[in-house]
Every structure is written in structure tokens, then in C-alpha cells.
Length: 221
Image (cartoon, rainbow, N blue to C red; front, side, top):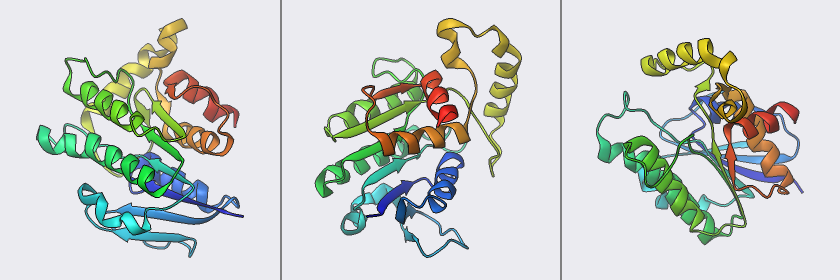
């Protein structure tokens, strides 16, 4: 029997790649997108539910699938107001995990960030750490939290700070050996492939997937 997948953040870089991969994957018969805007030109196997993701509970009746890919995230440039930033980066993934628990969805994959830590003094990494903690508290059977380094890919938006960071890291990357490997730039394509692999194997003991491990999974599968 073919599977059903939910994607949160399909209009973004990594979520969009996952969407295209699942469209072409015969293991999936139904793909549900939850977003603020509609994506045109998608095949019939894709269902779109349009609304405010900050009020995810409104989608409860349709939030049923075999697995959930949560690729939600914003930036300081796009969302400078911290309260709204936290509602997006923390609130949406945690609300999704809670709905997954309520509706009996056993597999939940979410993109976090390298350095996520509830005790961090940096707002961004602290928010990601709190998100991870509260997602894990839902005790979903198959939970995978991916912590990528800086993500490279063709975005439809201008992220000036990320572009600067990517340039600097590309210059420094040859020096990243040993434990520093996890700080190497990672392609969105690699993250997407790793997430799909994790969702379809479920035999990985690690719940927190480091950036270098994401690279290994994404490039070898």
C-alpha cells in the first residue's frame, strides 16, 4: 500500500526539493502540503491545504499521514521581531508534533540547526534547542531531528547574511577536518535525500542527526 506524506514548508528550499522527490517516488500515493500559499501545476497525488500555519490546529482533521517532513524556518532578515520569529521556528514544529501524536502519525522529521541548545545565549540556537526539546517530549515512535550547517541551494529569495556566510565557509572549508567536518556547507538536496532515506528505513538509532551524518546519509542513498 502506498504511503501518505505531509510536508510543512514545501514553498521553501529544502521542502520544495522533498516535494519534487516524493512526486517522483512510487512509494507515495498522496502528498499533503500545508502552507500559506498555493503551488501551481502540481499533479493529482498532491493535496494542498491553504491557511495560517500559526493556527495549525485548524487542519487537525486532515493532518493524517504515514510521515511528516517539517521544513519550517525563517531568518532574522525576514522576521526581525523575536516574538513572531519564535512562533514560526518553535511554534509550528511543536504544534505539528503535537498534532502528529494526537492523530497517530508515528514518523516525524524536522530540520533544526547546528548548535541548537536550550541553554544557548543566542536567541536563534536557543529557540531551535527549545523546539527540539518539546518535539521530543511528544514521544513519537520515529523522530528524527536534523541539524544541518549552513544550507546551500538556489533560493527564490535574497538572504544577504547567508550569502556572506556561504562565501566565508567556502573559503575555509578545506581546513575543516575531524570534528570541524560538521560545519561544512551542506546542500539542500543532500538534506532532502537524507530525510527521505530516514523516513523509509527507520533503523537508525540516532535521533539527533549531525550535519556531517546528514551528508553521509544524503550522498549514499
